[in-house]
Length: 329
Image (tube, rainbow, N blue to C red; front, side, top):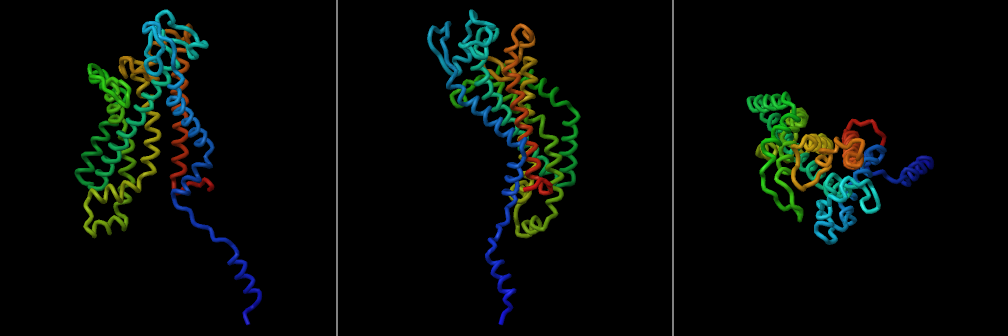
């Protein structure tokens, strides 16, 4: 006869529901959701995206030079010198600039371009950094030496200096183009390429360090023994296992790109013409720091909030994607 105590123990064990182990992605999501500042930053970014996307529906008014009601980007670019430097009011909630353009509308459409520049430049940065770092680590030898010496040479040149020089010589005289119904100057593409091409170096070194440790793993040796090509090993087995630093770098790269665009636009070398960005809205505002503070307060605050939110999200992703994180799940 089986012992009754043992039977009761087996029954109690059977009645306890089995806990399904969490996948690494589920663990990362749970860690991220418990990161209060990251959730605050994510909420802040969602509000800013909502502002630049839905705010265009609210930007409309009467344009005196055109003698008609206009909305959208036409309202953002409508200049009425009789309304220049008007403080915030019911008709212009953020006031007007030095030639009478509505600042609220320009922050909405300028925010779209600033975020476009930030995201696109971060994509260029991640592509260059991941590719150069992975190639240097995987092939080693003279390929590694050549790529790393080039990376170190780029690190020794101030990226802001390269950005200013590149924007000065390549940012003018380029034709405008249509992007999803918006007329953008060629300087937008130049700024995106230059920012991305001058900010990949730290990511390349991080990716190289990770790939150096991964290329000796058994699954890489097995893939090589099965006849997998170098391209397949790099893009299928190595780079997917470095997603954590890539995601964090891409997130923080957006903030750095927005700030870099603001730097060069403040110096008058960024996006030119009627295309507004938060950065070029600050150009010339320094002349009215006390007499018309709304010229710099609203675009400057939006830049601050965007960079703050992105940095909070980046910190949360770094902690969430770290397999050795001590944050409780």
